[in-house]
Length: 76
View: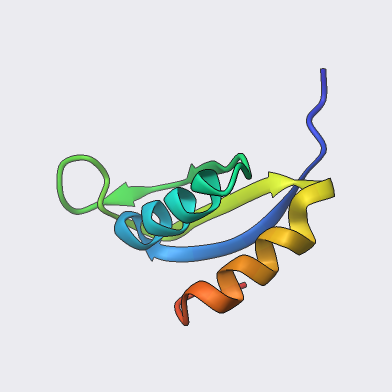
């Protein structure tokens, strides 16, 4: 089964990604986090390529509005 998801935003560190993930999930928006080439501290705190957040395509607009109100850290 293929999931219909859309990239919402990216962050350079896991902490920022986890904060936004928690915000969205607390508002019943499921989030997937993808990262590549993690470096640094145990637990992959930083990533050379970033941490990418994906949400269901049908909830993308709602999620985008939520993060634009909730944080100045989002990046595309």
